[in-house]
Amino acid sequence: MVEVHPFKAIRPAEALADQVAELPYDVVNSAEAKELAQGNPHSFFHIDKAEIDLPEELSPYDPQVYQKAADNLAAFLKEGWLKKEDSNYYYLYELIMDGRSQTGLVACTSIDDYVSGKIKKHEFTRPEKEVDRINHIKACDANTSPIFLSYRSDATVQGLLAEWKAAHAPVYDFKSYHEVTHRVWVIDDATVIDQLEEAFKLVDALYIADGHHRTESAVKVGLEKRENGQESPESSNFLSIIFPDDELAIWEYNRVLKVAPPADFFDQLAENYTVEKSGVKKPAAVGQVQMYLGKDWYTLTVKPDKVNNDPVESLDVSLLQNYVFDQIFDIKDVRTDKRIDFIGGIRGTDELEKLVDSGDWQLAFSMYPTAITDLLSVADAGKIMPPKSTWFEPKLLSGLFMHDLETK
Image 1 (tube, rainbow, N blue to C red):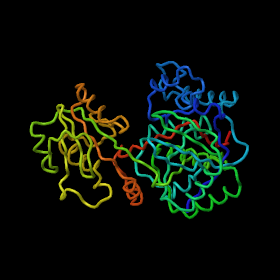
Image 2 (image 1 turned 120 degrees about the vertical axis):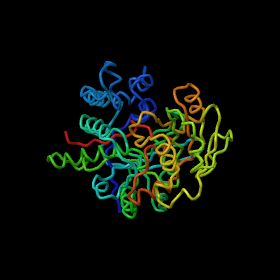
Image 3 (image 1 turned 180 degrees about the horizontal axis):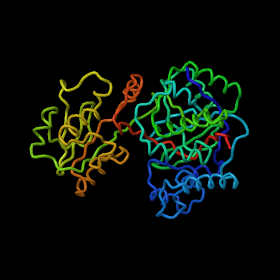
Image 4 (image 1 turned 180 degrees about the vertical axis):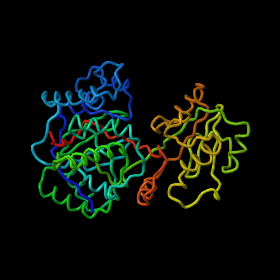
């Protein structure tokens, strides 16, 4: 069983939701956030990336940035741009992209469920990125960005959510980045709230789809407050949006290399892949990777005897890492090696061609998307995927929900 709890959300005034909501803090840099927030005093980037309101020479990790985030949050609340609910509610958050809909339950989940392994991960985190969010959470005394969780679809939960949507009007309904529709409902009926809480007690596990650093940071803050005698009921939980696995879409997470291929490059590739100059930009199936080199596209198909049944080692991203990046280019740690970068599938293969044709990068690899079933299997096995294995679209916007830890 897993715990989910209603909470008193801090959320935008209804007329301002589309002006407040922004992309997650970790998919834009400071310069991009500043440009996107230009002329919009309601932009959530003023809270989630508060360095945009400070001198450019200041590090985004300077203590002044976190204090500015807290000050801006207080100002948003004072102005009424954000308001805190008087009672504990659940919320529904629907995103529609290219005709495909996914609806998640906005709730608080337990730091103890994460510690005990009921909330499962599939990625490692980097300490310096954790510290950033830890400082942000502490300064604001709030979870400002939700964790994107998933669960194996459950008929009881899905029925309750569908019934609520059908019988009630959304409080927010607007389009934002990439023409994605965002809708939010407030579940304020005590009976339905109880039914959802009981239904999730029959769910075996939750899975982090996106937000490993935010999760680690939220949990560490909660545990620290507990240890220091500063715990509140809210600080033992963190803000999450929980989607059924069968409604999610994982896009490809492509790769580019800044390194010249060796003279026998194709001979080395042929040891593990069949290689064909095909002109095809996207792989058609698991086991294929498209490679862009010298203005030509090649199809790399892994040889069957090079794949085992391990849930991690059999992934296309793992095979490419082991047989190409490691064996041929001696790139062993893709999280720190500057010769590799990762390009989200939303940018398309044109972006890969652009990067290589510019001369700044030498090779690009277009991947087949990792399946959600693979993610769940890896997490269930207690294993870790290679970095940048999954890219979820559409992105959950930040600013629609915040969770007050109530420890100040």
